Structures are given as C-alpha cells and as structure tokens.
Length: 422
Ligand code: PMP
Image 1 (tube, helix red, strand yellow):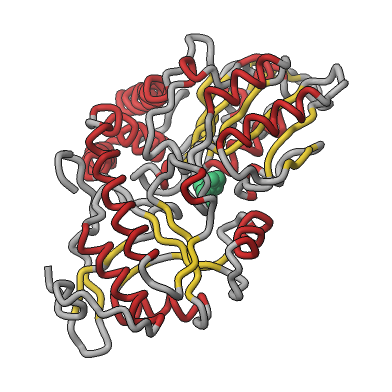
Image 2 (cartoon, helix red, strand yellow):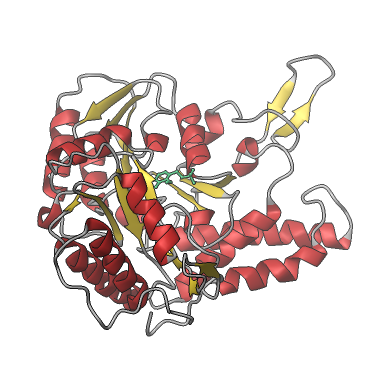
C-alpha cells in the first residue's frame, strides 16, 4: 500500500507451488487474524528480556512491567476515545469481552441484537431478541426504533450490534444506533472486532456504552482483547473470574471477601502483560497513522477486488451491495459449480493464497446471504485485506478464481501467476 509507513511482518514468506517454484504468500484472511505490525514486534521484542510479575512485585522489573501494563491500558483508552470514568478491561479476545459483558449486565437485562452478528455477539446473552438482518444502514436504525418502541418493560435494555460484519464488511451506523438506543433509555454495546483495525472508533463522540475488540485482528498477536465502557454495571457485577488480583480483602471465613472495583475486578489471575503491551502498541501505531490514506488505500484495493470478482460470471458476492455503501475490505462469495472447499484449497495450493471458507461463525446470517444470492453451495469463500495487501495479491486472487471457475473470460496477461518470486 502507498502513503502509509505502517508495515507488517510475514510479507516475505514464500510457499511452494505444484511446479516446484516458490511464491510469496498472499494472506487474504485479515478478517480472521491480521499479521503483526512491525511496530508491535519491536515493542514486544524490547519487553521480552525484561518481563516480570506485575502488580505485587517490588523489584525494579516488576515495577516496570506494572507500569507498562497500565500504560497499555492508557493507550487503549486513548485509542477508543473513552470518557474519563470508562473502564478498560483486558480480556482474551472479543468473545471473552462480550461474555464478560453478558455476565456483567443486570440479571434482568433484555438484549436486542441482529441475525447478522458473529456468534460471539449472538450467543452469550441470556435473554435476547434477535432482529432479522437489515438490508441497509437506514433499515437497521428503523428496525431498532421499532423494536425499542415496542418494549414495555422497565428492565434494562442493551442493544448489542456489530461495528462491521465479518461476512460482508458492511459498516454499521453506530452514531445513529446509539442515539436511537439512548432515546429509549437503552444502552448500546458494539462488537468492534472487525471495525477497530479499519476505522477510528471514538466511544465518547459516537456515544457508545461498550466496545469490544481483539488484538489479533488489530495487527497484534493472539491472546488479548478489550472490553471498554461504562463502569457501573461492571463494578456491580460479581467478578468474571474469582481469584487473586480481583479482591480488596479476603477474610478468614469462606465467603468473606470484598471484591476490587475497576478493571482489576474482572482481571483475576496473572495478566497477559506482553499481550496487553502488544495490543497497545498496535493501538498507538494505528492512532499515529494517517487513517485517511490507509482507508483510501484499502478502498482502492477493495474496489479492485470487488470489480475483479464481479466480472467473473460464476461468482456470487454475498451482501446488500450498493444499498450498504460503507464497507470494509471483506468480500464473501461462491463460485457456481465448484465446491467452496475446493476453491479455497486450490487457491492455497496453486496460487499461494490464504483465504477462509465456511460460514464464518455467523451461521444464520451467512446461510441467509447464500440463499439470497441464489448460491447452490452451502458455504462461502471469504477474502479480506488490510495493511500489507497489494494490488498483486488482489490480481492473483481474481486470476485464481477466474481459473478455478473455468470461466471463458480471458485471463489478464499482465498478471503472472506461479512465477512470482518477490
Ligand atoms: N466478532 C466479529 C465481528 C468477528 O469477526 C470475530 C472474529 N471472527 C469475533 C467477534 C470473535 O473474535 P475473537 O475470535 O477474537 O474472540
């Protein structure tokens, strides 16, 4: 990509092709896990020789690590534009963060969500109303308005929505949804697993109540996520995990315990300091990057990918298309007459391309999209992009799909597949 100084590790990894040559691996699976930013690797590399216990150690390295852990929290706080009294809890990933929130909401909370959610935002809730997936951002706002207007309960209501779909890349109208939720006295939680790496999220400006995301989709390694937002429900809930670090005082008799308030209440056990520092380094790097350029680069690649695939007669692209104008670089599709798993394995074996296939942990939504697209395949292929994706990756994918589809569309002679050695 041009214009940005961000770079990722792994762009020089080569994989073998059937003819014995090697080709640079084209990772087009960023929506599952994105490669590590160089900035993140540098920060982690500096900390590895120094890490020690946090919070309770008196030694110099313990103090350093405690400071780094809390500075990591400050970076996330700044990255998300949190309000001063918001809590930022480190979790294992988005799934963990949303399960923590489901655990922390008042026990009689009614949750309203959509069929288009990832399972992580579909399954943790105890009492949930699931609205049909909307066909446009305006339809999403109107469905929420109708659902909230129809609620007669005095119980707390939480609207739990995605920031951007992991199947279609469609970006949700968060400010409008938050305003609607608040107009009816409800709160809003956003699953930002896909949105956070690609768009600036400002909790205060968007007036969101909770945001969850994962480090491994934000160009940091696995094992760390975040739940950020309003402190009251979190501070009143029983700790998510019971154990050391979550307590203010433990008495001599069983059950005699005062739990901590603040993030520590839900972070019992030794924290993943390296993971938190890595995630924070990714937040810092993205916050310092020119997001307009990054987005312009991604949009150009996304359009190239979309147009290339749309030009292949056998390809069916899933999603609402132009009625959902704001989309991240994620395209899910099927190829008529070719099993989805065959498409992805041939892309890997013959073209050195990594994509994902399946129902993307959004089973009800992806099944509906397949149906709407008239696809005969029961699953889809997903290609997704980010920092480090190049036009060559996109062109290679389009050529690969064209070849696999057996389309009569002539191949682009400018794209050399199988002899690339960059
Ligand atoms: N929500 C969305 C929209 C996602 O794309 C994902 C990951 N595919 C998740 C939640 C879950 O993230 P994690 O696996 O990091 O918990």
